[in-house]
Image (cartoon, rainbow, N blue to C red; front, top):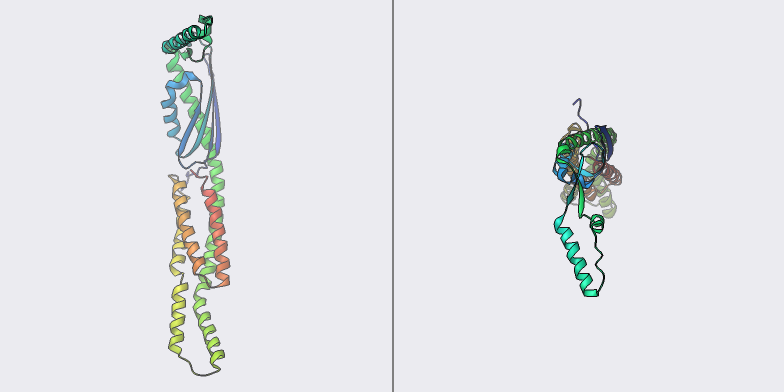
Amino acid sequence: MAGVFMQSMTGYGKAEYAKNGIALTVELKTVNNRFLDIIPKYPRAFIGLDDAIRKTIQSKIKRGRVELFITYLNTSEGSKKLVIDEGLCSEYVSTAKILSEKYGLTNDLTVMSLLRAPDCVNEEVSDENSEKVEEALINTLSTALDNLIKMRKIEGEKLKNDILSRDDEVERLVGEISKRAPLIKAEYEEKIKERMAEILNSIDYDQSRMLQEVAIFADRTNIDEELTRLKSHIAQLRNICREDIDTGKKLDFLMQEFNREANTVCSKSNDIEITKNALALKNEIEKIREQVQNIE
């Protein structure tokens, strides 16, 4: 499908805004995470915009740990106002009075002391400028997100190419195992015949018993179903890589199925060549699984 891009969860995006006395810098850094985890770091003046900021990010990013950094400077006329936290100021005043009376100290609390006290007086964006600042912030954030996604797509294409290349190797190994598997029963039957001939020294033996043993061995080591499912998984992986919705989650589940079948092939194997290819198969599947962990 043309225009479909796999996205990595690792990326960086930045955007800047400078107009009408408002200066904004928005930076985004993402790494892999099972779910979407947004960690914002911005000036106190933007606390009221937290919901809008999160919704903007959620509209474009579905998975990953997102670290957001915002720097802000507003020199436009009437851009700021100071807000007094009267409850907190009252606490400072009453606490100073209690300490003075209890320990016989001079109560030298002043207005300047309260102005310097943490969070007693806070700077906020004025109502006249809040809409203008919010619009500038959301637009700048959207641009930073677009830049982030560009980088994630570039990295995602590299991951996809590596995954598909390893899927080709998985297909080759499954093909080698599929060619070898039908020969095991015949070889085992021949070994049983040779062993019986040696033991009995050409004396007649119960051939039906031998055939029964061969049948039991063939049933115990049969991997036809596992190989069929592995071939299906190989095709599914390629189809999922053409999609752009929940790609990472789908591939993560598929790799669990890959692992289950490869482990069963190894456990049933009684042949050196099949075991060697099955172990190589598990190794390739693990490498794909590691890459899948970083896909959105």
